[in-house]
Amino acid sequence: MNPLNDDQLDELLRQAKARPPEARPGWPARVLAEYRQQRVPMLWRRVMGARLRIPIPAAALAAALLVLLGAALHRPRPPVIEVREVAAPVVRERVADRDCAAAPVVPPTQTAELGFKELRPVREIKPRVVRSIQDDQ
Amino acid sequence: MASQDEAALLAKAAKASSEAFLALFEAHREAIFRLAWRLTGRQDVAEDLTQESFLRLVRHPQRFDAGRGSLRQYLYGVVRNLARQHWQAQGREAALDDNGDDAAPLWAVPGGDPVAAVEVAGVVQAALAALPLLQREALVLFELEELPLEEIAAIVGADVGTVKSRLHRARERLRRSLAPYWNQTREPARKGVSDESTE
Image (cartoon, rainbow over all chains, first blue to last red; front, side, top):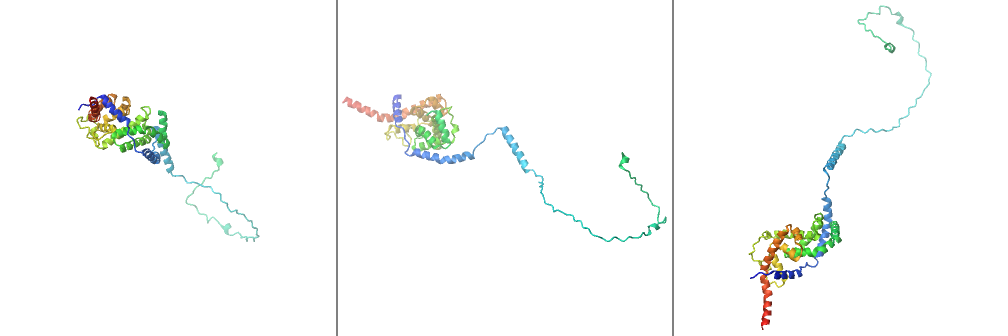
C-alpha cells in the first residue's frame, strides 16, 4: 500500500488538531481542591525543612561564640556574699555604786627576815639585753 | 500573559494563594492537558499528569527560570518528563528509542483498529500512540501544538537537528500507518464520485 503524501498526512493532522481532547467535567475543581489540601502541609514542611545559608567565616564565628557561651554557663560560680544588716541588741552599761567595807590591812610578815642564806648561785646566766628604739636609730 | 505577571502569580501561588494558582492553571491547563493526552493517549492519566505538573510548579517555583523560556514552555517540559516516567513505568522503555522497529505493525495498539475507528482524531491518536515516545513528542509539539523547532529542542533537551530528524521519521511512520485509513475512507468516496460521473 502506498504511503500518504505530505498533503494527505497534513490534512489528517489538521483534522485531528481541530478536535482537541477534553478533560472530564469537574477536573479543574479537583485540581484546585488538591492544591488547597497540599497548601497547609506545604507551609508546614517549608518551615520545618527550611535551610539557612551562612558563609563559612560567619558560621565559624557563631560556633566559637556558642562554645564560649557554653563554657561560661558551665563555669563554677564563686560563692555569693550577701550583706545583711542585722539589728544588734543595744548593751547598756550600768554603773552600780555600792559602799564596801575596806579590806583589813595585813601586817608585814617575813620579807624583812630574808638573808644571804636563801640566795644561791645560779647554774646558767642568760643575759637579756633590752634596748629602746632610740638606740637603733 | 506577560512573563512578569506569570512570575508574580507563581510567587503568590507558591505562597498558598488559591486565586493566583487558579489564574495560572486556567491560563495553561488546556495546552498542558492536550499535550499530556496526546503523549499518553489516556484521559485519566493526562489529567493526573497535568495536575502533578502544576503542583510541582508551585512546590518548586525556583526551578522555573524566566530567562530560559516561558512558563508554558517550562510546563511542557514538566509534563513531557512525567509522561516519559509514566511510559517507563508501564514497561515500555524500548519504545523510547528513536530507532524503533519500523517494520512492527503500527496498528498493534489497544484500541487502534483503523477500520473500527471512524473519527479521524481517534485514528490519528492511535497512530501517534504507536510512535516511539521521542518521535511522538516531537511530532505533537511541532504539528499539533505548533511550537517552533528551537522551543521544542529546549523542551526535549536536544538540538534542533535531532528534533528535525525525529520529526522526519515520525512523519514517515505516520504516512504508512495512516495509509490504510485514508484509502478506506477517502478512496471509496472518490470512487463513488467517479462512478457517478461515468454514469
